[in-house]
Image (cartoon, rainbow, N blue to C red; front, side):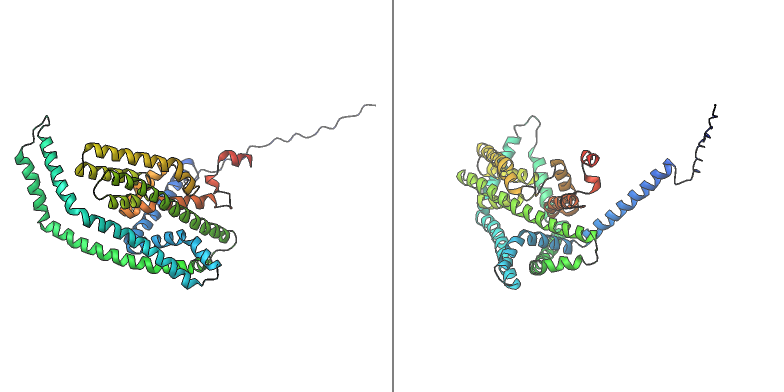
Length: 378
């Protein structure tokens, strides 16, 4: 018996109708949309930077106070854990900070004031030797041209332009005093009520964003604190090592130069080079060329020792940034805020990157910052 096979109907899939082309859905429209988004972000960033520069007198003291409060947060926590009240602990820590900052300023001014006349006399002798050496160059520089340069400098010093600059300097001093007072007051409240202030700022966030804000706050305190404490220790070692070398070589102003090495060490890469150049110049003017070369060698050896041995141990993961990132951050910070911008740019960049690394969890970076091989395995 033959059975007839039933034929299964064949379904022929019809191709989907192409989506109608619109101005903002094709490839050019996507590029235009992304370009508008980038322009909006750039304008927003520019507006924020402009506002920060306008409010520099407020922003810089607040940032410095926050960094100092993060650096001394372990000491505040230790004092509170021993039963000391918040107000007495704050007063003790604040007094210690003011004593340290005042001691640094006093060391610089006293050392320069005590040896300024000697350095000035030696500088004049060095300039005379430099002019005598200039006469031996292949191209001739006559005395009349040198006198013209001196007259131009003298004319600038006695001109109204220099006078206006001096008046502007008075304004800078007034701004400095105002910013210093504001920083001390803000630092007092950050030390005393820092956790309560941050808890108040986290109130608008809920759910995952609240946990993210908590991680960001904790990371900021840890990164700022570790960076400042590690950098201060490394700077102290640099200052002591280079200061001992300058004292043995009998370089004038060696106490002031040692303190200057300590201050400039807070500017990564560039600070060490600048401190070495200044110390070598003083040794060249006050002593001789051989002493200046020895000073350069001492600075290089000390910086290599702290960079290869001391800094990795003390800094740890507080500043895991590539040297190129540090240089770019220093350049941008210097252009926007001068010396203060150069000092603050690197720790701010380190904090920003540390927050990115805990954006989606305690050990989970933001999605765009994750390694692609880790993402693919997950």
